[in-house]
Length: 97
Image (cartoon, rainbow, N blue to C red):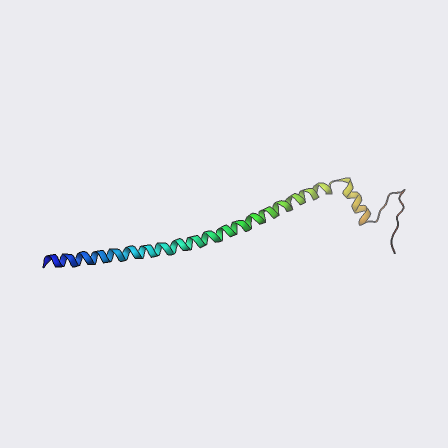
């Protein structure tokens, strides 16, 4: 009778271990899928941030160019002509009606 009891216990132990292995496999599979989706969203976010960084770098370059232009005599002359309507003494100005 002891051998039957040991066989039942052995079989029950195997079933229990098999169930635990299957449960762990299922849990790990779910976690892997979650991590994969999270990684995909991070990659999309990284691509968006890189595009935004590129746009901001272009904007910074434009602002630097504008800053250099503002410091020139050409800028002062353009502002005097367009905003203040000033002209040189020997210039003739024609206006459209």
